[in-house]
Amino acid sequence: MRTRFASEGKLKYDLKTKAAHFLILIAGLCFIFLGVLIEVFVYTETIYGQRASTISNVMATIFLSFGAALTASFALFRLTWKSSVINREIEHEVVESWGVIGKFTYRQEIYASKYVTDIKKQLDICVLTAETFRNTVIETQTMKELIAERVRAGLELRIITVRPGSPFLVQREIDANKRSGSISTRVDELIDWIDDLKKIVGNDKSNNVSIRFYSSLPLDFYLRADNYLFIGQYLYGVESESTPTLLYQKDTNGFKFYESRFSDIWNDERLEKTSNDEVHMVG
Image (cartoon, rainbow, N blue to C red; front, side, top):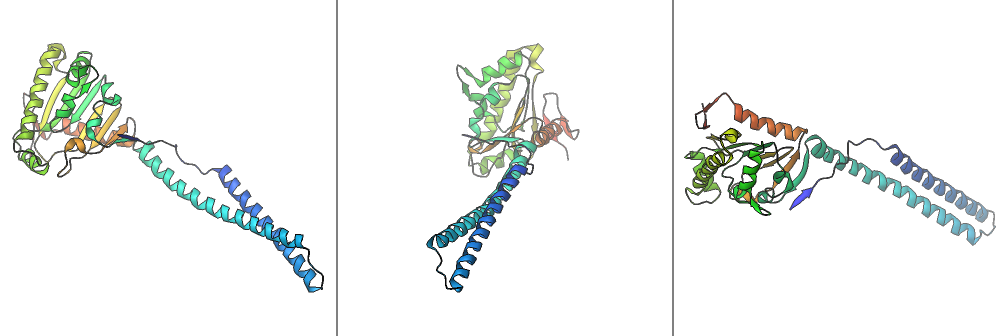
């Protein structure tokens, strides 16, 4: 289930809100002042042996009570308003600056979302096996068929995954409570899919599809689909597809940061690139 974050814009001090708060305060003080005057009047009458009217006592009580209520409301409004200021400033930082516009409770939910299925130009993925992604069914076609269709139309697909046989891949199988060799087998299946995809789209579009490998601890899950970017973690003892994943939008600090990190890994000169697009970390 996706959780939405609504942007409120950069917060500015609201003069109308401030004015309304202080009008409430002034009104409250005025009522208290009038109540005190009436009380003084009643007290003065009592001193001089005159009987204060019941109406005067009632009016004094009403004015004092109403004034106290308004003054208390002013204090409450100020406290809650300051709290909302803090919340909206945090929201501004998360939404507008870093570009987090949603959260998916389970990673497997993102593949059939419009953010992925509407891709046209760029699909970058940093993943272990992409098994769920590859096998996702979208209405009347599979993700494999959709990707082939979009690649033929000009989509560029780049995938980074762990090198088959890497000891770090073996460790991930242990951390995720997987059967020995199960993740390695799925990485092999991912490679086979890429090879088949290149054949399906033909020679003129095969260069739009590439896969590279690293040999280190698994990187965070990364999927960039045109103007949207998903980031998630690989957690100890938790299935990858059951992990929460954040959604970022383009032209924000968060999107730019993670996009840059993917490009750095893809283009890093310290990585040795073999003829089959395999990348090994050097040093």
